[in-house]
Length: 468
Image (cartoon, rainbow, N blue to C red; front, top):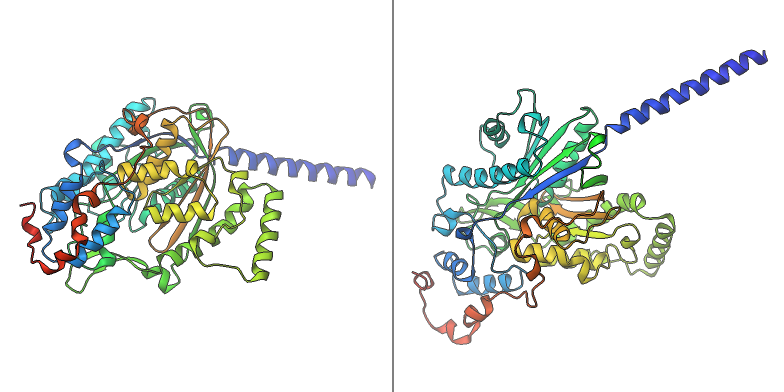
């Protein structure tokens, strides 16, 4: 009898050991490593300086003095500088009637430029070795797809797994990383490419609705290509390892769904409307996301302290629905060293910064990415990451939080671990020493502040001819 009990115990232990060993082997291939990334740097002829920006705005005959004053106030407070860029068809005056060639040319330049440089940067992986390809462009989806254009250009294998993500908004590149992470669980020893950009050429708003003109003030040309793998023997070559990724989607709420949406205005002009509910949706989604993320990245003592403080605030009735108050009492620096907030606009950077009690040092990468490149949609995270690397901030063992929002409405947060000291200047090469500048104010108020003068209201001015 004792012999049978001993045998049963041994068999159970052996079975348990086999299950654990099998789980270990499976998890070995579920790691997600970032090997390299390459951000797009527009050429000089695409620069959208103050005068060229004003020329584009003032040739819109639908706008009047009230709209010009609104745009002036928005641009002055946007946090965007003089070095941002936009598609050539807009600079050439064809924003109201773009054609398919404009859209494809814009995508080809950004995508192929970053991929060519990425394969040059990491020559040990050729296009024919890529197993998974994910492209995210929210507002342009041609046929054949953009992934097909990439496969054709680089003559990739016939069994490559391709995915096109559209309509995902500014946090789409984090969604794309999640797609790659999920596929890595099924495909061992694989390489994956993620291409993240946005189509501006066919999406410049030419109407006069204020809530739809905001995108013209913020969005600029940009993009990024990234190379990932789950091959463990590449760990010593990788720069980042994915630790945690949390996605939150509150699209079941009508207000949240409609707060950031593409539609036509009353005059039939297609654009992207941002409503006043956007900040409330951001606060709600961010709160729900942090509830899942915090236990995964912070030590137990910090979690217990935060829970106690939250309970006391709730008891005192001091709970707020503002984005700035979401993380009140939360010390994210106990588990995170660097913060890569999506550079979508000064309001978003300020809101998340106040919410997580971040200082100007923490917010500097996002502010400078916005100032230098503008809101490059889903690629913005990687310009901010590049700034951290160029400034030699990233050391082995550090953790980076990427945080952003997207249409739908979504909030996505991802935590990376730095695998080695990083110091590549990347897209910031030849200019990083001049950042941060002493003054990040743009020159719009200096040149066009006269629009706010009282006398302008009584003078009939043909604004379209000012820059003719």
